Length: 275
Image (cartoon, rainbow, N blue to C red; front, side, top):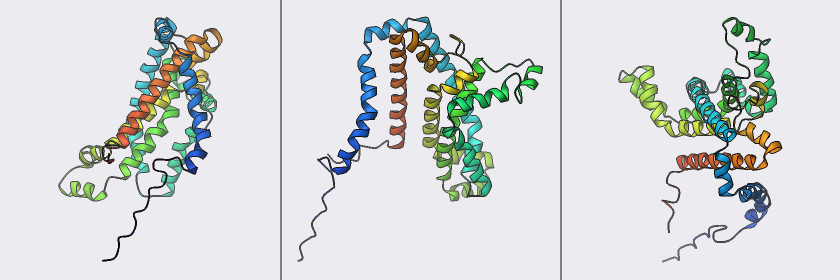
């Protein structure tokens, strides 16, 4: 009986290999500033600042606008994701490039673009003004700025989810008499649920941290358009402790969002790992 071949040793298990060591400088660069910021925040200080009207108003504006913009992203983004999930065509590649564009544009450019579109003298501003609608420097402007910069995160994730639904299942549902809407509702959406939730969470987190487009298109008015990032900007000049508190809150919310996304993508991570 021939001896069994030796089992390969898992590389890097139980020790730091070369790649781990080479990755440490950048990992430290990413982690140390966050740890330093959190280390400067004292719990008593956070509680005191949470009583501040500026902090409460900024949190309220951020939560209201991001929830609304995320809902708009989901409703308006699903049709675009369906287009991107189809077989590759030239038109699809063009749509894909257009969806990716806000992720590479500087946020200030996005703010200027929205202003020259919806401003009083903008492309659509005059028509809106005739109807008594003024968007710039209102919470509607905050929502549109967030929608512009966060939509790609949901659309790309949803498109991947839709694309992974087996076509045979949709065809079988259609042969059984289901309409296109029924196939989408009862087959496509349930199978792509994880991708949809992940995209919505990432889109919400991106909207929560939006700054550049918002300050140009919506301004920085406490209680009306001042979101948490804008309050941090003002707090940095007037009250650094307030800026620290809001920064810690944003870090916590962003971390919770990322943990949710990781759990959704890998729900059984660790459960299948042998002890």
